[in-house]
Length: 557
Image 1 (cartoon, one colour):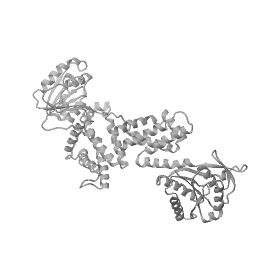
Image 2 (image 1 turned 90 degrees about the vertical axis):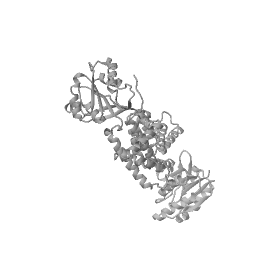
Image 3 (image 1 turned 30 degrees about the vertical axis):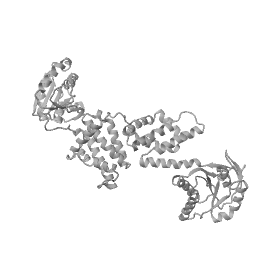
Image 4 (image 1 turned 60 degrees about the horizontal axis):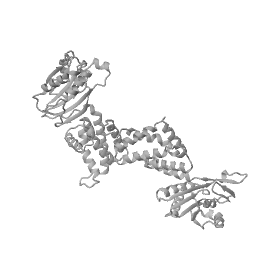
């Protein structure tokens, strides 16, 4: 691998001094000589103006040769008095090192803005030309020991790595990608080890973790994202690992210090459980979609958006536990097409999302493919519909068919509100109520308040607190009440009444008959304070689908 030293000479009256560090000691008035000893290059390139050449070229060349160093090459540059001349210096340096493998810079005798131009040249060479910058030196004559005439040598090579940090930070801030930062943290831990550092160090572990999160986001692996971001919780402020990490950053990766909190703030909202049956994970995936859209990762956003809509529909029908079943997901996908005719957030979303995602996935190989700007605009619109769909969950009503009557089986205690909400939400054709004789007295008022005029029957038990032994008796009465009905959709309300009533409902509600089409287990929720519920029990609450079993799946005692 060929190494080139790029050095500068100016028009100053340089004085002799001993330049000294732990690698070299050389007495000279020209620091390029010292830089050559430090770099051991095969090629020395001296950038100089016409004036500088007249003053120093011959004596510098002579000293280099006398010390057994390579024959230097001249690189003529302008004085850098104007912006145009500075750009010309930049271009000439670039042209002179084109095709080199390894470059070392010495900026000691550069003048005016040339040190800055040199640093920019380093950046350009490193990232655009792929040239390895292995040294950046400055001979600090002004900082010399004047009595001993010894001048220190500043090895600025480490600051070339700052360029890598700039790229890594920019990549994360603008695109959310942390692979570059993760690699720099791992490199920093290796530097600690090479420097003889001992003891625990969190840089490598943290670097691998954030790189893994970025990879999972890029490849749309939501459950991997959930799992890995949960591990970031260990690095929250105040934790032992956070303190260790901050110490390691301060000593070995200072540029990362200012970014740590921002990175955690960006990734921690995804923290969850890789178990696909956890409902909270659906909200976390909605956060991922927002993250994708904000950073214009459109294919990823559309892919996850489609799957999230299907998963949320499955959750609302109590089938989230089966969300990895490919055939069942396809079944729900087909059902969603029936929503297109409805002017709801879900209908608006599904009317464009599948086609939009397919258009992107087919990479323009369609006769009616959309322009990029339209795809980006519609993706943002789909996200807005999706967010509205999630917000309107309390308005969700389970799917009904005209051919199937609905039966609501619910308990009634001394508080009428939950049964009132159940009737309003389910809108049953037949209502079956399990209650005590005392609580049954309020049923007529509940039915009137709910505007219910359909058929209803009441099953009473002796003691609503202790009649756990009446399950078989209630089961027989439920079968008798439901006998003769056409195929029906049974809704089992788990809320309302005492613990005993709810227990019997959960058992007797699973009675097997040959005439039901589906069963859906639901729960009613009233989030108001207890005092407000007592004052006004007839306020419409929420309904949550706990479980849904369709098309002939039977329960047996």
